[in-house]
Amino acid sequence: MRLLSLLAGILLTGCQVNSAASLPAPISSLFDYQLQDPTGNGLSLPEAVEQLADADVIMVGELHGHQGIHRFQADLLAQLLSQPRPFALAMEQFSRENQGTVDAYLAGDMGEDVFIEQSHAWPGYRSDYRALISLARDAQIPVIAANAPRNIVRCIGRQGADYLQRLPENERKWVAERLTLTDDAYKARFMVNRHHGQAPSEQQFAAQTTWDDTMAESIQRYLQQHPSHGVMLTVGRFHIADGLGTAQRLQQRAPGLNIALIYPVTTDETLPDAPLWSLRVAPLPASRLEGEPLPAFSLSKPECLSAGN
Image (cartoon, rainbow, N blue to C red; front, side, top):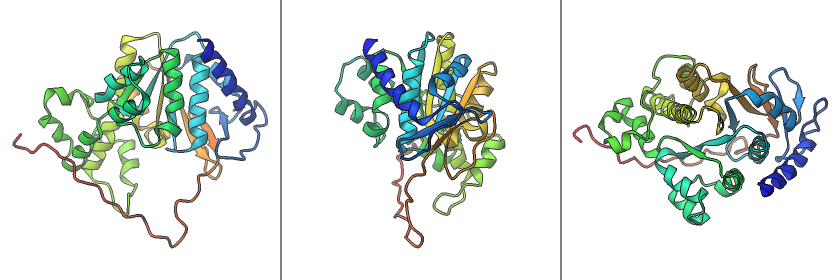
């Protein structure tokens, strides 16, 4: 715990440069951030955590690979771990079937290379999530591998939610028992987005909500078993935009939970509406300049169970 306290002190010292209660410092690099509460007040991290003390779940949205956001996630977790209330870390970036591997690494039973390989960690693990896992490992707190397996989600995206009926019991448990397939606001938001020029299908929405429902159920189950704990979730920002997605699915499952949402925006974007918190960061470099072609896009077909299985 002494190591954790020292690390938290270092992280918070850096954070003070980025956020102040009245006049936040300018964002001058990709590592900087400014945190604002739902009323628009700029806060230091200790001030923010004091306001978040009653939250059962804190969902931190991210732009995948953004250095400032990943720094904030580590800063926030370090500060939460200095509070009396026990916290667990839940992550979109690991799926349920790899929970045993995550637990083994936290227990010190394997090295990092083996952990990355066997947990199917995201490609940016070392730069984006290593700090979070290291904090959890040093503090000996649980890490919830909250997501559904990619291969199953991809098969749902091709064949629809009925695909789950063909899964054997030992695989079906990796996905939420119930998917939210109604024509709600989240579905409307998803269906107007286009990926590589293609409009989404009903099957693709089923795949999308599989992620959200599974993450929501994973958190709900943990809190049922540990009602005095809090949970911090790291998740792509689309999953919590407008309070929908994972946040909505969790609230539907557990209406009494106090859920706080921290939504990242670049300095050229509009701040989200209350009750979302705002995490302001610098824009990422442009992926392509005008006139540059889109990268070649190909996705190998998943090995899905057929209707006869």
